[in-house]
Image (cartoon, rainbow, N blue to C red; front, side):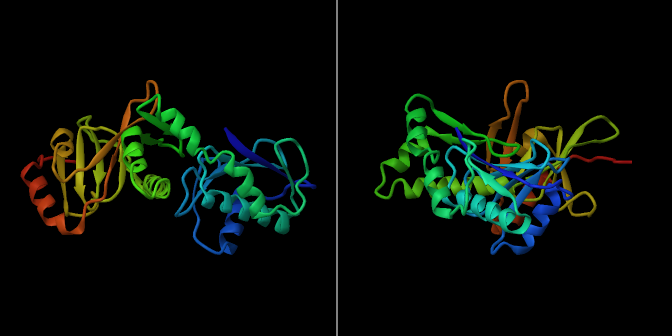
Length: 274
């Protein structure tokens, strides 16, 4: 389930989506995070308060699709409105709804009203009544909503506000988390890094714990010793059929840095990268 708008440009578009986004980023009133594909023809916008984000991508020449997915938040709808309003005024784009109707003078209230249909809390509740979790694809890593957490918060007096806030905070941490790259060292082992920050990491042979491998303040630790550590709080995130799992490693509190480094120092693996 989704809500889509189409932006059509009346003349041959001599500018890229990337250029539009860069121009928009200079003029919006608050920080909006973004991720894009390598060809820069598919963007996701995200901000504090987002859950699903707002997608903007190119499907046909001189057209853009602006899309909100089920369980979009009010912030996601606001981002969609800001972008639609911007390209309408700045680039004279005509905005069309899903049924092909021209949207003259679109308002944030209209998007809020239409997106409320896909806000999805009732749908989410119905799904979680039958399953122990629900998967909300985000960008490259899905957001898992677990029935146990949903039921726990539903029993409180401030549901659904507390649950929406929980999902928004979790979604933002997932979106902002550093994607740790893997590299292969000369002996064939795969290594990745954790700098005590929110990190998305794939299982590997060794984890570099510390700042980075360019400095001297780092340690090589076996994956099993790393993941079993009391200092590592994580969620396993399945990536889909045949894709395996990744791990969302939570940021470590500053007060625990010294203890964590001492622990990993005891489990360090001597290694020669030359």
